[in-house]
Length: 267
Image 1: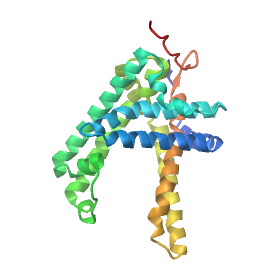
Image 2: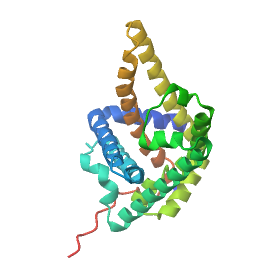
Image 3: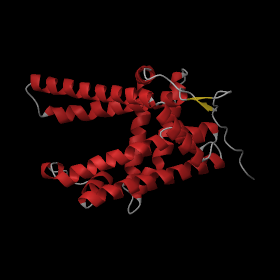
């Protein structure tokens, strides 16, 4: 396995590939995304450690959506069981994915802890456990500073974990090596990733603008929030359908990465 450096224009190709693949299997990929959201949401409701466990499951769940996109791109119908692909590849890789999930949860909580030093934990509390987001709170300088700090700290965290689940699952690397290779790949292909992210941001803003204009034209601005939620969820499903392509083109292997076979049952 070796790193593949791609031009910045590849980022737009990833964006288009995600849209194209999603619309080849819209019901399957949207359904899997909603199952993913439901799973994370239900787990987060568990007492005491719910939020931590849901964070730890994110790498494995994201890997499941990547595997679903891979199936759809190859003309196959992704079944619901593909969401737990990370834990069906044998004990060694399942354990490695669990370690990766625990590391992600710990790092994310450190980011939230750093933001809490700025505003006393208001932003972290809203993000992790929910609560009432009032206009006064949003306009608070401390809250805004905490939000921007969290976003700035999350960028290197995202680069560490962007490719790591796929590297652990499909190439069998250790979690530590997966984090290292992921960060290097993101830095070396930063131009392509920037174009990719900006393409999605542009689509989200474009759809939001269309919904706003439509609701105002209909004389029912109150419908905006009602219409934006399903639109945002659909766009998010499309976004997750494109992540696989960023991994596929960032690494080259002498032999194509194969789905790891489950370990035989022990007597």
